[in-house]
Image 1 (cartoon, rainbow, N blue to C red):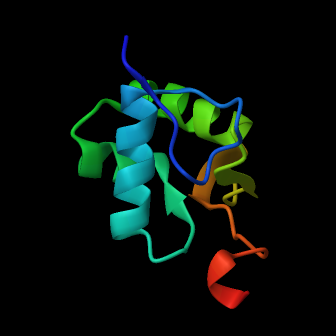
Image 2: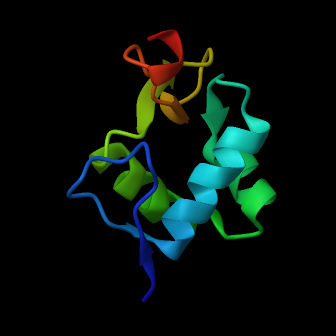
Length: 96
């Protein structure tokens, strides 16, 4: 398995190739907004289950944020949808 360490990752973070590709697609397509797993899977050409593992790596490396929204349609079972976005970097070198 190939690992890579992007510049935004913490020093100890090692990412799999798939996590790096998911991170790249988020930077290209998301414009900083919240994105659902099926959209990320479509961008990367990978099944949603595999994308979830890569997203977990990115969340652990503090490169991506996760938010779960609960939905309760009338007369239906409650469900949830999880969204992801790039972590906002408030200490950017560009502002220094």
